[in-house]
Length: 329
Image (cartoon, rainbow, N blue to C red; front, side, top):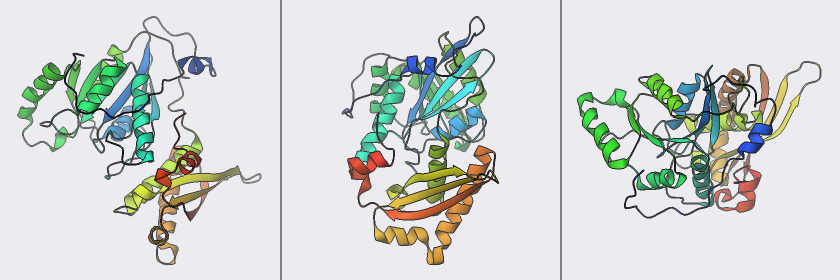
């Protein structure tokens, strides 16, 4: 990608993926056909451009949580697409923006880590006429990987004839390998995008077992699905002040039912009252909706118990962030 004048840089240290550890794990490294392609793809972009929706569409199942609120994604989430001739490991990432808290710095490190370990980057936007984020370009350039431009939500565009000159401009001015107008929600043009992604991957081994779609633990998935319902049912500052931690997971000896106890944390007593709701009606609703989503994902019935705790200013405290799993390791 050509050198270019940059906007003020977002500082931070990047992590790299331990690919040797991945290759040593389980039976992932097995014989693959000649010409087999594999690699890691980082999906990056501003908040709420549809990165998680695209990952779910590519996988054909719900892995990443999705809401209409920006900033829903807080973790670098791995989703693996397996075909006969390729294995493409996609990283959904938090929205790229300047950090306003220690939690925000964690989110930025997740994006950096995804880029530093990638073979290919997808820069995703939903603005066909705006300028590409210079910090995103800098991350891609520093990683030294080819990049595709993905313009999402084109199903909302009234005059699609305007897309062609825009796509040509992006490809010429910003050094993208290819540009794709898509609708991640409806699936428009996603299949050709995936086909070109696979063609762009290097030949290599199968990093993960062919029946594996993610390395995310059940407890983390449960935490994410609970937080998704908080984002859907509550508004203003409360969703952003919420963190979820699974405290106990145990399978009943006789019935085999999975019992899960989780705690939802907020920063203020007033937020706790709103989250619980009158007579506990809101926390009950969060529990019911979360349980349904979790059962669909796990393929079994569960018992989900929720309680609400207070961790003042947890987004700015290292110890609290570490306890809640927001720690770059």
